[in-house]
Amino acid sequence: MSSTKRVAVIGGGILGVSTAVHLLREGASVVLLSEQGLASGASGRSLSWLNSAGERSTPYHQLRVAGVDRYRTLFAADPDRDWLQFGGGVMWHAAGQRSATQARHDYETSIGYNSKLVEPDQIAAVAPGIDAAAVPEAAIFNPGEGWVSLPELVDFLMEEFHALGGELVLNAGKVSVTVDGGRATGVETAAGGTYAADAVLVACGAATPSVVAPLGVEIPNGSPVSMLVLTKTVEHGLRAVLNTPRAAVRPNPGNTLALDHDWYEEHITEHADGTFSIPDEVVQELADEASKLIAGNPELKPASWKIGYKPIPGDGEPVLGELGQVPGCFVAFTHSGATLGLIAGELLAGEIVTGKKHPMLATFRPGRFS
Image 1 (cartoon, one colour):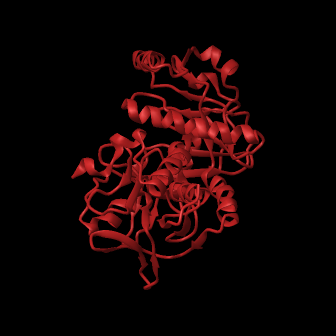
Image 2 (cartoon, one colour):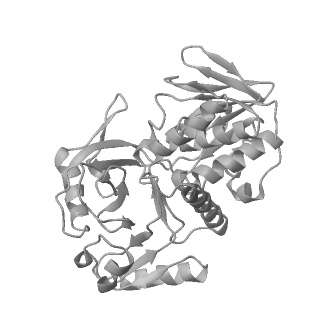
């Protein structure tokens, strides 16, 4: 397809970059503006577990399954990429909650999601690298799940972005949407730079609601503060993503591990300048909890950690599509930015270029809040 549309994309994370590349593929011209560097926000500190496990609305489940499918296609093109792998997902509840694990497995099975209920002594056979002693009762193994390291994926997509003639503006600072006659006409940076456009996409993670608020659009924001820890290099045989009561763990390029959870949120301090801090001993505690999950219990040492807001809309469901109050302005705001990164970019680009609304996004329109 060819398009004469000029589109300004605000946000250098996976949703902005993916949509920008899909727009360029369809012949649009694109300027991509990032507040700082690429993947410097939530995409740089995402566990990025590719899944549709557990219970959620049917449209959300279907969109996530399509999202995982797009990653499978990318994986099949080069299975040796160390930043995109499919080793399955493993989760378990705390001791005494076997009935909750059973109920989750039963639900997943009822909707055709690949779900295996395994006993501790069966874990090693389906998901190597896990310490079976860490599993209190039964666990769920979802063979179809995987993980991606979003900074590497963003770099990969940006090669195509540049090859297709996209324009990149780094360190743009705060960017606002310009409107004339009720319609989006482009964007303006805090420093006064202006970029005219036929359409604008706001994909600023947890900041998305505040960017569209001046347009008279309210999107409830439920984004909590979260942290992602990367460990120093460690020998481990882990392939699956682990989601357990005290630590979430996934493999990461360079024989490192990525760690996440939510129990330490109360220890995070937000400062007046917008930065965050957490005591080093709390970060080490998370690493120690993760070590208990890995076969051989290797000593895990944090190499780096990033803290910031994890994008979650107020009702938990994605917010994707055009603003009813401001034609030409689109938003992409969702908790599952990694899983939806490729599919959301594809569907949004199609809507922006053709003007035709995609039925898979019908329940995720921002107009549901107005």
